[in-house]
Image 1: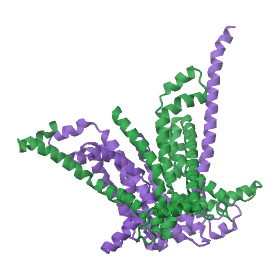
Image 2 (image 1 turned 45 degrees about the vertical axis):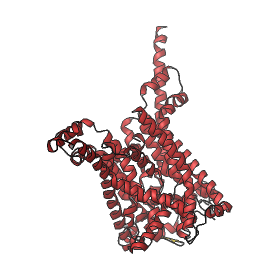
Image 3 (image 1 turned 90 degrees about the vertical axis):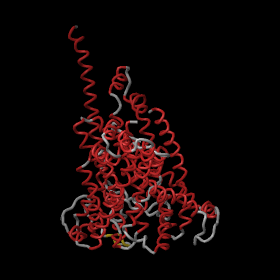
Image 4 (image 1 turned 180 degrees about the horizontal axis):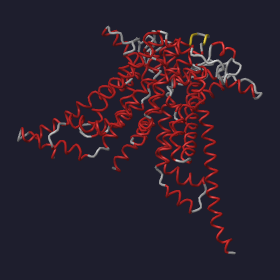
Length: 305
Length: 299
């Protein structure tokens, strides 16, 4: 314990122990603001929402599982469940695929030029989503849609991008893919660069074609980063609010609501806080799955180190 | 005979390099297509912001601007509302960055170097809290803050500064997590030497860890700033009066009114609002990307 040496000069006996105690006290004090923040503004609200979900609208009576009973009987609730899953899963698949393919294209070109292309391709991720979604909203505008202008120009009919339920579902997914794909690109590009070039050379000597190289070299090497990014993105996309809120606000006729937008509509706009809290609680299951995977990963890493 | 034998390998090498070349051209081709797809919305924002309302209503050819004018910019920069949004956004983001750094740097130092009871569990917990989405917390937080308002008489609802209390929940877990990674990569000999020389733990943090991990701190700062600049849900929940709104919520709730859309002004407002993160990105791209990738590679 070289650490204790300076303390010894001041207090020869017992100083060692006191210093050790002081070290952990200092450590605890340094982490205290973090602990308070997490306990007060994350853990407590999360638990409190469990309690809120068991109250009636005016928050005076305990109704047990009454709110859930009410939700389960509504067709709209099941529509929101379905739409949230479709939205999150489709968007994440396309984001991951786009990111994976783009990462290969960027990786293919000379290193000197990669910076410029990567720089341009990351822009959708940098613009605050609330603001870029406004641009999409304007591109989808029913009477002035610039996309429809192109469609008309090549002789096709107008598309009611945000007014027809299925097109609206397509549009929110498209915007989400546009916003999220650059993140996957950056992650996968970093991962691609860490794959040793010799592996590809060895595969080439063994006569592997491009698909076999991806299947047997790239994918196994990138397995960790792919699972982590997909998991993250699944959580974030599942909990998305701004894109759906601005593009469709859940419409037409509530057909594009996902958990977050519906919880906002019920809880904040509709003033039924317990019901809104009950809806947002449905984001817990996916979190639980993610937490399980990540904790396993962290403990694995602990064993390796 | 001999020339044929000599030719064979050369021809093969030639075909490989031709394949490479073709792959290169296709890569450029698809990258170009994707750049068009990715940059269409911001480009269209810029186009629309330069159009007069007359040209927008005419809608002859939406993909170009024939009579550019800065009308939208001047009217927006002169408007009191937009001015308020910008100031509120700037104050909220800068204060959030300061609060975030004050909380996460000491905490990351303590969790990566000085152990105390439960510190390993806390480090894992920090990462898990990063995963809890804001959409799960906004309703209970809203209820808690209105309850505190009733209790203390301090108006927590509908004031821009309440966001400074709430935004750290978005930024602190991630910043702490990546700072733990950066601090852990500093060689132990460095702080041991300083401790032997009689430095205190706080001195080690301020004199050694902060300067050495400065790139990580910059990356974390950028992350904290962009997240608090871009957040949309919490301002929608906690603020309603026009003079208390921050940019994203302000543009959406005040410029979009009923059926009358002044698209020129909306696009100008959105473009100007997107400028600070874009500028940071343009000048500090490497730090920006380091912050992005640190979360997954170090975690």
